[in-house]
Image 1 (tube, rainbow, N blue to C red):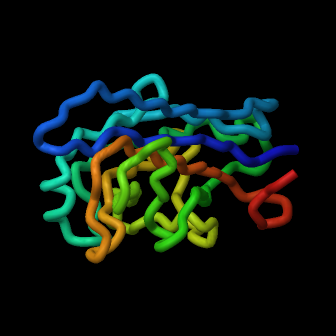
Image 2 (tube, helix red, strand yellow):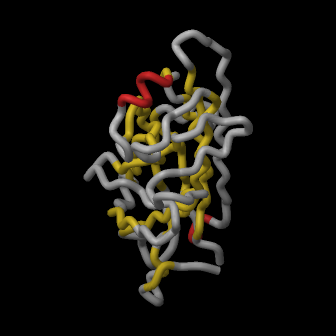
Length: 196
């Protein structure tokens, strides 16, 4: 019985110089798995996840270079509504855990820019809205969320650009970060997070 729902979020835009303007495109793919009602949840994208896309506002190199290193800027809110977990099960779900993974190299809270020919000195960050907790993308950061069988739960986040460090200037080019969200609910029989 599988108890993991994976959603993939891509935030993309472009960093441009004040002189250059370009058409920007981005793509987000949200993946889920549906099993029988006693062993699944319904996960619905919310906020600025539009057809699976979070489109960040274009930022100029001057704006990006003026930002403090490690700070989210030009943010967009997004999230997931989780409902109907383990419907019909004798063991109701009362909580969820969320882990997020992605490619990082210099800081576990900054997604590397994986765009081909992308801007340098800049990445993507994600922060949980309820407590301003910055998400770590190395899989070590397990976030616990409450769950109500009658109302479900809202997983709310904000994402934005992050200047990687103060020594590396931000250059123009596209920006893309990919984070994989894994949402688990406890196996009420064993008391542990369920995995197949």
